[in-house]
Image (cartoon, rainbow, N blue to C red; front, side, top):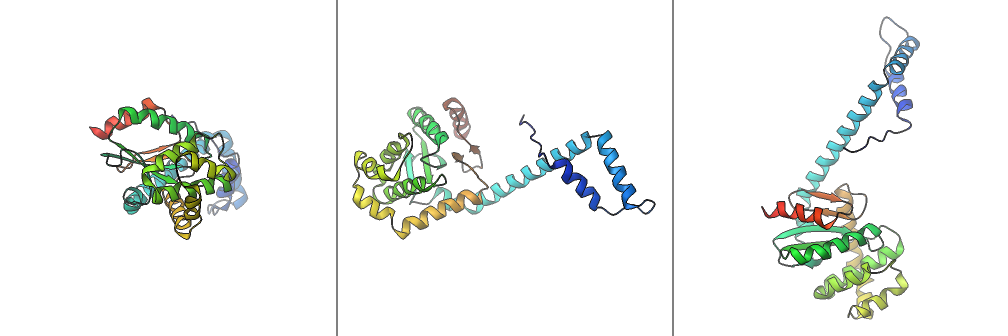
Amino acid sequence: MKPLVLNPLAPILALGLFAAMPAQADMSREEFQKLVRETLLEQPEILREAIVKLEEKDQLAQQQQFADQLKQQSAQLFANHTDGVMGNPKGKIEMVYFTDYNCPYCRRLNKTLNEVFESEPELKVIVKDIGILGPDSVQAARLALAAAQEAPRQYEELHQALMSQQRVQTAALATIADKAGLDAKALQKKADSKDIADKLSQNLSLFRSLGLNGTPALVFPDGTLIPGAIDAAGLKDILKDKQS
């Protein structure tokens, strides 16, 4: 069960909410506020129950937003041919992967994916490169997006090269691209183009429209969402369900 994390201002906010309510006809506002305060002090579980209920309501709203956006953005998520692809490009099991090259949890998940690819030949991972961890992340994402369009067959090599770094820095991108067998100069020119800037913006818009707020995040066509890193065993179990 997810642990309950209470906002430290919740009691104050709750009292303020009650204070804003109109007093009953047979008592003054001050008397009504006093009654509310005494009730909460004597039965604090009321406040806890209200906060839990509010959190459940917020969670349901987030889930509905995700489901609605997944339906509306399905083509952009799963059928946009300008994305980088890992695994089997023609695989029957599709999964979208939002990632940042300077995210340590993404590096952990990348190792998981490499392990899973060995036993899941039908897995197609559609990579949505985004740069949310600073200027170096933005430049790395742009380079990867350029590779996806200019040299799609070598995209995965560049992706792995970028993920192998402890931290990706802009100054090292040309060297990384060269070592991955790509034309760094031509790739950087493409990375600096408006097309790539627009593509990066599109990926970020998709990320935010789904209500996501961190990387990595895995999204399946049926609405399954895996926020954060997952180990190989856990991912394989999920993939088994997709095949059944």
